[in-house]
Amino acid sequence: MSILALSAIILAFLVFMAAVAWADRQTRNLSSGLQPAQAKASIQAARPARG
Image (cartoon, rainbow, N blue to C red; front, top):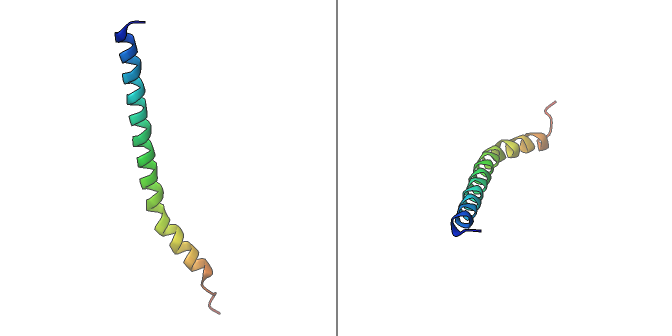
C-alpha cells in the first residue's frame, strides 16, 4: 500500500471523527435547550391543584 493511499485513509477517518464530534455537540446544544422547559413542566406537575 502506498503512502498516498494510507494518508488518504487517515484523512478520511479524521474528517469522519470531526463530523461525529460536531453532530454530538449540536445534539447536546439542542437537548440542553430543552431542559428548562422540562424543569418547568415538572415544577407545574409537583404544584398542588387549586380547588
